[in-house]
Length: 348
Image (tube, rainbow, N blue to C red; front, side, top):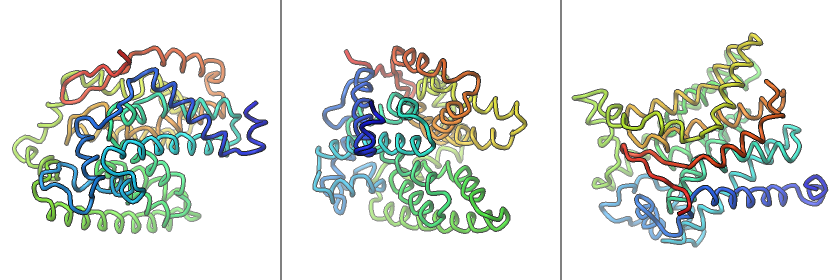
């Protein structure tokens, strides 16, 4: 059926699949119909990103609110922008998987790794949290890895969305360099591009912090405690840390683990390491912050690439058990671990 519809419009089918996945996601979590917690600060920034309140804690994370402001969706209407972003992220993921010659059902399954995990459930449940916006830009930076200028630009924009994306720099540098026609030249060009990207971001971030000195979540906020105790944030994240990491993807964690295992067993240990690299990059954030589950979602590319690899190769018979795993995952209660607190997100 989907193949027949795709003959008319593959993009239309991608949006349809994205919409269905969003509805399924809302069976796992309650929809945040208004800005909550830090989302209130993002919504206030979307009302006027050029003149934020002096004490707005996220005044330097300007990109998503700015885009919403320019779209005319200001203040609390920021939530509509984020809903569009969620749909775009899932549709683009579906289209990428279709471009890899996966049939529509497998492409939908691959997109579900983002739709039914905290990558998008955070944005759906906590009104005003632009996590899906950041993920869309990171995915774009990876997809454009063969065109270094576009990949670097998208990564730069992801950094403006949330500075924690810097932890993915080693992984993106690796995949950008491997996309070059000549390995040594590829590493040199990729390293130069990454250096320019990080310098430009640091300059803009520094300027924004100086312009808004009362913003709470600055580099000083995260780094100052480490001067006296390098493990300060890691200890703060200790309560329920294991649950928080697991809750980011629940059963979907099996896909990258099994994919890397299969690659290693076939003698492709380097490929296995690159596939898993976003996971330690994401977990490294726990040494500078303590919102365990949300921070862990930065490993989403490992989950997505692992899923794609297993479906493409039918590794460990994945095509037999992938959909049963997705169904089983659907019935695991979704929680979020932040600041040592376990928040149940399911419909009440």
